[in-house]
Length: 159
Image (tube, rainbow, N blue to C red):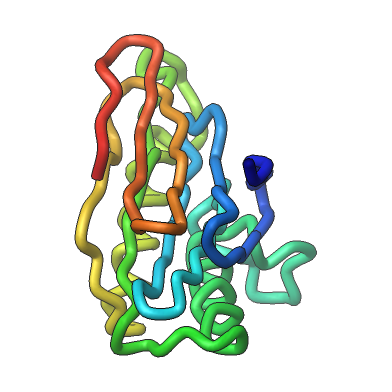
């Protein structure tokens, strides 16, 4: 059996079938999952914040705008075809709605920025499990492109 690889915050990992990928413990972070069904190439970027600073971000993978673009570019470099790539989105919850934070709902802002960039890049989003108030984990099966979502307070879901 192939070992599960977990994608950490601000990280991109791309693998081929049969190797599975996971994003564990998504709160306001968003897992942008891309998959090419012909090459069975799958990748995830685990984004923390919506927009990278304009003056040379320290880690472009941790931002929704630059991380999503970088994931697509790396998928293409490894042999995926843009017209075949599909995207699935998981996360972006509002974990602490009662707290007086600088950014009221970072999860929603992350989701909006990912959607904006994917629209700009013309990458088709085929499924999502985003926003709300619960944390989740996402597991990508690179053999099929299916994503299993697990949460402590909800039934397992496949998208």
